[in-house]
Image (cartoon, rainbow, N blue to C red; front, side, top):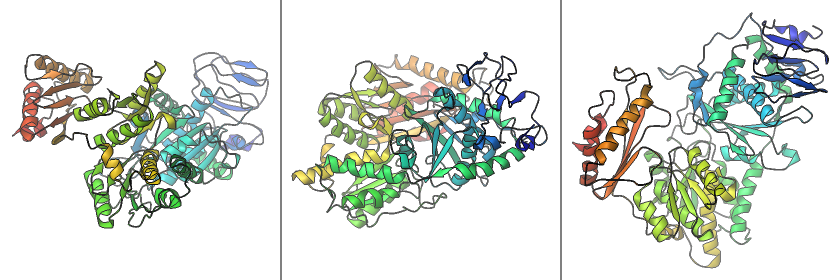
Length: 615
């Protein structure tokens, strides 16, 4: 070979390297003229059209080597049989719905690392290949991918590895450093040359609120977040790439990537957009939050920017804000608006500081919650109710989409107090958001899709689940009320949900399915879980005190004794979560006793938590 780069390692027999515009191997190979690496795809033939490739096939991986570019020294996939990577990785186990999640750091017993740098590089290369196919790229225009991270201890190493995979595929990499998940999606929409925007793809390196040893990836194009099928496709490609990688190739790729990756501060643009949104919503006032004292709890995640780069330019005092500095060990509390300790922490800060409002984010800022000046938590059902009230003021009668575990009181509030429609769907933020989008396409006006976890997306914000933007909606309400003289302080928010009926008792129990139990058949835990639900369904019909929900999209939801319960199968894990709400402990125990009577015969199901609950 003419180039010494290609001599770094001997390619295996199934790899074809071409350095001539005229050469072609056979109809089962992916090919690009001017020198190419490709893995035999064995799917459909590839036709050459001039110097372009008709890539109307599902390519396994296409990496083009073009003279004068970084591709000329790409080695991470020009791999050989001499020193291929030895660790066996089950790529399918890295999928978590529409995200990728894995163990990236040693230190937790029983949790071996499976999201290594090599795995991350293969995933980066696979996303590049997927994006090339998605955009029908012919290399006349170079595609760009932005990368951002949260505060995790493995963030930089995983980001560098992903960058190697992407840059090696001939795509430009734009690194943002610490960013938020919503900002990454926004980078596919922003038009600004000095920030290399818009990008055609974006990746956020995060594992949300999971422990320090975990990490993961979320992917975006201008169409939104990728779905489950896309992630399955990317991981399938990554696994094939990983199997032909070598130690030498990753080292060579690192040297190349360091020279061509661009670094910019995209958060400057993202935060400016948030500030502008509040000013516009408050009638154009420059400092509409002047006089407000607002504390922020970032949980040592990536959300610390909100205090200094959003609230303070708007005039708010942020004294007493806490855990703004990034620390991937999360030493103070889990950055999770659903976590009891986290909510107690921000509530204490609000009361200690006598603040008007408290705001708390998860690690990557796609979820949020608030606390009013009295210490009342505005999360879960209350946050949904508050945002529904704001949205229905702007769009009377619109449908509010939520996940399946919202309270009956929330339905009453949305439909009878606000005049909207409550569409209770499935768990999973992507399921909820996609359902909101779908309803609009079939003529049912929908402006808010939100999960009790704090993932909330608005039609006006491109259906992006953006915790910072949700808080902006609250800030606009505060600021506008003050500017108009209507009210001052967070009471204006509390008053919006004064008619929301909170359940006296709300509990969630989880029944684990023992996958090693002899009762588990060939269908696995999912089939077993469905058997449990079928049995429960049969017994509900025979009990006059209970009524099955007429419209339900997930599990078995039943009303009775002034409360309700929902038993469903977890989206990803061998678990059946049970949610129970009621006006008293006596009522919820009656519901629990009924569920226990229905499921106790299933030997692989651990119902010990429910037995303790009803005792």
